[in-house]
Figure 1 (tube, rainbow, N blue to C red):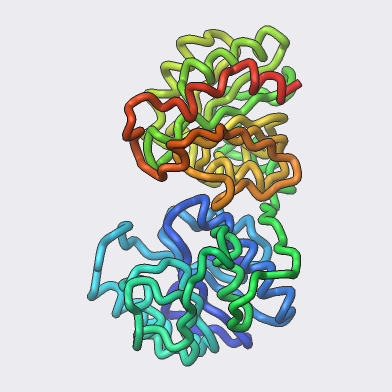
Figure 2 (spheres, rainbow, N blue to C red):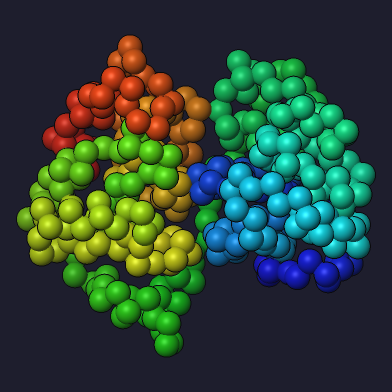
Length: 352
């Protein structure tokens, strides 16, 4: 699977263009749609248009033929750039576009690309831009993954009855890539995979602090496992670097802060080496699930009923409080009891 310049035409058919989401977790759940499309149409070619940072993640999804990237920022209209991209895609002769985001602007590119069948939920009143409009009934399709998959199936007012395949990344060549060549990731970061089991912690959440288990709880779990001979790797973006530094300071030796030190593809490949993962409801949680890692997923303001980790190895921890799920970025009651009342001992018991 390759990245393609927009100006180069494709000769294969049939082909579908997916307008991908801008969140890591949503992009991971979109892989279930790719799998269903391949199941229903084995010969179909799936190309995905996404922000540049998604490139390495999609290259680990074998269902995707080509990844095409853009630099449009999340929430940006970028009218001229979207039109340019759409016009450049006309030569690709796609039979269908499936638009996963529900914003009005996300449907512009397939419209300008003259793709004959343009599928998506109504979202922000996208009549005309889409000509295969679906009306989302969340009582029938409560989970995000079901909503994505439904766009790859014929219109229906009924729940999806066939099994939904779980996302599954393909990191089988990870270890050589991490240890060989000038860009050897393990050497650059000073990591050794032969000194005992690895506990991966993902203490951040792009959405906001109402999804974040207290950092001192993460540190307690980390210290407990370090004493038992484990090593702890902290994962996250540059925005999580300060949190990772605080956890590392509380834990001491045996804990390495990788937050902001890796690209997303490098983080994926390093997570593939972990033995257990503890994570907030975040994009990295969905990545760990797709890697089939033993996973402890902690839910605060969000709900596993909507965005669960799609893995047989995941343990979901959430509390039945009257105030949750509130889906707020910060706790509106200022106490964060939905996460503070999940104690480290409960999580450590799950590791056992």
